[in-house]
Image (cartoon, rainbow, N blue to C red):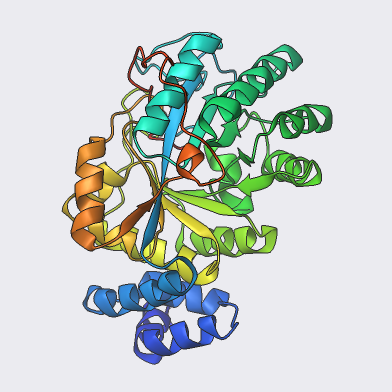
Length: 367
């Protein structure tokens, strides 16, 4: 049987409503079913989205969680990740600076709080943090927790066990470290560290007692097999949060000429990750504005969280546009921090944010 024949057979043989029933009953999506999702015809897209939405609704209702990124250290990176504008070979024009001071990170936390974000993501470029950087971030995290009560996610590169423990002791809730793609394809996008290095950091984070945030970047030249394998690998890791990024090809990066995605395929990718990871928070992340375009709202049927405002070194749509999209869907924003009954309101004398939150050079491919 040719590949085309197999794909056609997959399209004809799967009942998406039945697959949703089985997933809700505890079925674990197989590799064959994953391929069928990605190979499904565009005429099946609404039925596929409905199946993914049924699973999303069962575990998350119509709630949407918002995240805000802070580029706490930009550029100056020795790694060669081909998708990222901050990598050592990139000629993209981006800001370059060392770790931000406390005031700027606190301003970012206030912006996250004011923007209805549940989670504030502190992101640094580089292979991994120094012990001094970990200590400084940990001190600031304690202050953010005391002031705003925000959920904190840090994306700091490869971590050592003692660094992970320091962050956990400071109150960091979650560490982001994306797999990005499959083991097979990883060496095609990065040569300065390995897929196993990334798995080691995820194990280190788990051993320190923090939650795992790890996801994928679709559209880097990978095959359907790579996407399916990544979805199943993240299920095995039992990650709490799974960002699905879509390549935002940035001029000056190794992948600047790669433009493989269309909105319909992006939605199929989101359905794959939702059905393969039914109880996991799925975030539509970097590149959504560029790749989903007029179909952005439909991404919220499989996904239940998104980044609000900008990424690391690229712009997103305005928070007001995100709020309107969520409201138009009939969904509600889940806000955390001092809006919870267990917290009191932050003191009125806190300083106003002095700057807009920074953005992700890779289209938020770091978080």
